[in-house]
Length: 176
Ligand code: FES
Ligand code: FES
Image (cartoon, rainbow, N blue to C red; front, side, top):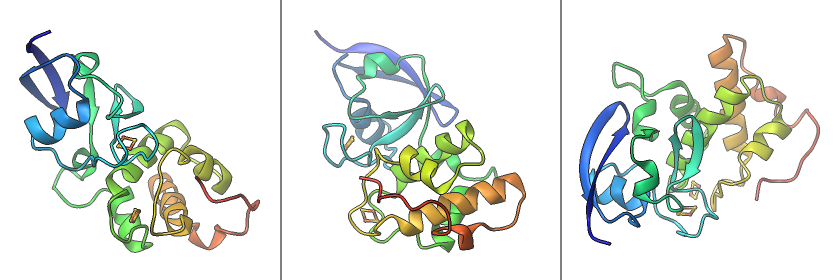
């Protein structure tokens, strides 16, 4: 099938694009729209580097055809900054709690964490690890990612930092 016109909305901006229906959303975002936050890792739905928010759900954009994204509202890590362009809460907490090293997984982690906290604003450590299990990190060992997400929850809820609480709750295995 040849190229078709589609309309997709990314971070509040609507784009008219021409693409083959089978084009993967990650390629549309990065190559057609120049939105490079979502990364390409495995392209087989395992790593989560390509995670974006689509119509209020986390999706791995390497598994979504552009035809499926037509008309959808998509949010990438770029859309999670504050209105003044400063780092959003989750981004800031990842920075503060060293939730990244090389940073390759980070856009997907933050985008997934955003949806997790929308769905469960007060997660336990175990719930964070379970909810993030589809996003892999080769560098951090996950502990600081979990800290950053729990601290984000506290910031968003207006409660005190829970970073000290990490490790005090029920012990769970690293998210893999
Ligand atoms: Fe999509 Fe790895 S690149 S899950
Ligand atoms: Fe390097 Fe996660 S910080 S892969």
